[in-house]
Image (cartoon, rainbow, N blue to C red; front, side, top):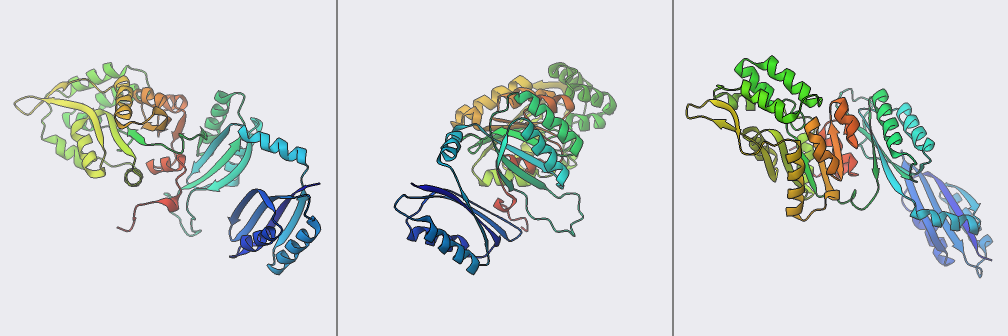
Length: 409
């Protein structure tokens, strides 16, 4: 009768442990049914599920492995597995799989406890836990640290909306971000990322900055905030704000452009995406003049934004040329770019902060509300509020050590 045995080997990590154990298995012509290994702080945990054929005897095999483990100063445990139990485990491989990504400036046990509790309550079984962020020195006192842990879970929640709601509430309580994605081939093969500009790629609303120059800053900011909260239709709010800019001298555009602060992590994110071959685009309800400068600086492939109308005297007329880039237009442009590049919508990522970004966030394979207002954060499938834009890299499984950018340059 054939035997199925689970080997668990643990101890100080050193080169050659896996080689030594599997070399013995090879001598007995043992089939390996599953294998997994993890190392945490130089401590190895190796699991090997083996099938011992009928013609082989397990006793000599286990004795040889036990002696080798002792020689390597490793702990070992043998656990027999019933064939029926193994077959049930095999049948479970077709179950849905999801990825839970936990992001924060610093992670603590409370973060892990809350996330795993919610997962367990929704019958999600954790298969793997991986740290995606780099190691942080105990002496690092900056407030720009990043921490990310990824959980691979098996199972399908009965109520996905309820699960997402609980994760959103937990994220708010813990000052963290929690993303929940289906682990499918599209998650691992994103090819196009489109961004809103104002309050996403840059930490400002350009129209508000122009309004300050025109002396109508408070009036325009009030309309902008209401629009971002979804209280006013974007088209109407845009029309009202543009009217207030009438007569503004075009000479102020350069001054405004120079003082626009780029969002934390924007350069690292876009540079890595470009190095990996992603197509990138700015789809903005702001203005082409400023989006074009970002394109030149960061290398975006596409830019679509509003074109300010300037009269012969060099004054803003209060109108824009062409079609206004509103929420519906952004979604339309996302579809057009994806089709042009031969990319499925499931392979796209959309990032924005306002209510007018929701149409494109809803159709993208991965829609991310970035530092968004509550309405947008609750409506989008994913949200990032605690980290910079480079936190998006974690949502596609990117590790800090995978960075293709030389930060010293």
